[in-house]
Image (cartoon, rainbow, N blue to C red; front, side, top):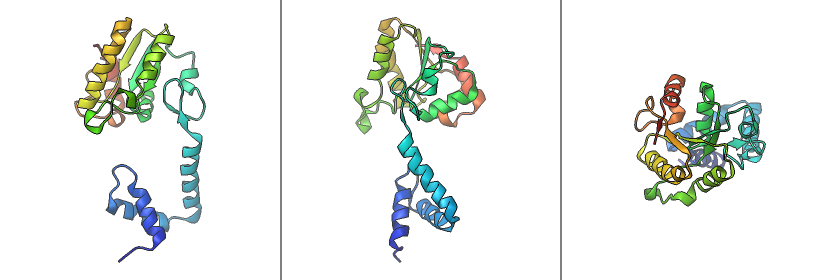
Length: 199
């Protein structure tokens, strides 16, 4: 049986989301249809507003409504450290622990030759430019995920940054190999920041 076109389009739309297959997309589509009309309207408005109003900070690459973002504008933060993460959601995870008070830099991915992602495909050039233009930065903390791609990216950044005389550290114990920062609990993240090691 073929679904009516509006349902089929909705299913196709849900399937564009990562990790959503046909069955889940179908379930979500029918759930959406069963929702109250006002809730559906609010949901649609939220999607449109997020896409329309959010963009990347021109300094750190974090998701923001304002440019620069609130973290980059906050002069009370430690201006001498920059924590480098893969995705904007990792910034949110780190901010939850309330132990790190420095700046961030979002790469928007990692080096992955298999996927055809090289240094020019992620936000590394702007990090290097930022470090050259801001002599206050004394330490770069690399917080890429403990995956082969995350490790390769960390090593690549370390090789580029160290010659400039900037200390390069890596989040240490607490994060197991293969884990994503966004799924770690607050204590694990706290221990990882506390136990970072120079590269």
